[in-house]
Amino acid sequence: MTNNKEIAVTHGSSEPVTRPEGREDQYLPPLADIYETQDAYVIMLDMPGAQKESIRVRLERGNLTVSAPAIGRAHQPGTVLHEETRGTGFSRAFSLGEGIDLKNVDAHFQDGVLTIKLFKNEELKPHEISIR
Image 1 (cartoon, rainbow, N blue to C red):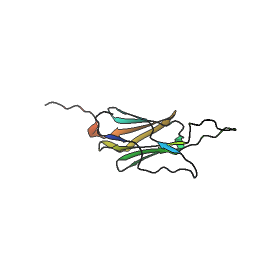
Image 2: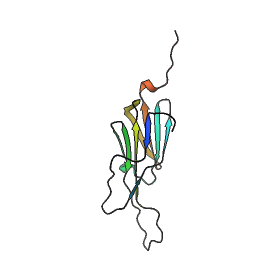
Image 3: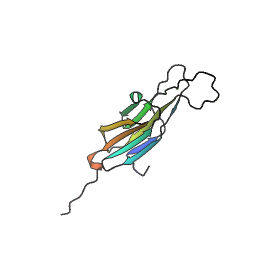
C-alpha cells in the first residue's frame, strides 16, 4: 500500500470467529488489494469457497473486520490418501482513518471476491481552489 494513512492493514481480527464443535479448522487472513479512487477506497478480498450469507462485515470504533466461518468439504467414499484442503475460514481487520464516511459503505460479493467500497468524507476529495 502507498503512504496513505486512511487504511491500516492488520493480519487477523480482534473479533473471535466461532468454530463448529469438534472441528480443527484454520482461519486465515484473505489476500487483499486496496485501491484509491477520487471518491473512495476500495478493498478487494479473495475469499474462495466462502458463502455470501455467512460473510460478516463489521464497522466498530474505526475498525473494519471481515470474517467468514470455515466450510468443510464433504469427504468422498474411500480412504483418504492425501489431504491438503481443510475447512478454512477467513478473518481480517483494517484500521480506518478519520477521513472515511463510516455511514456510507458498500459491500459486494461475487465469484469468491468481496469488494468493500469506503467512501471518503468531502474534505478528502480533491477540489479546485479558485484564485482571486
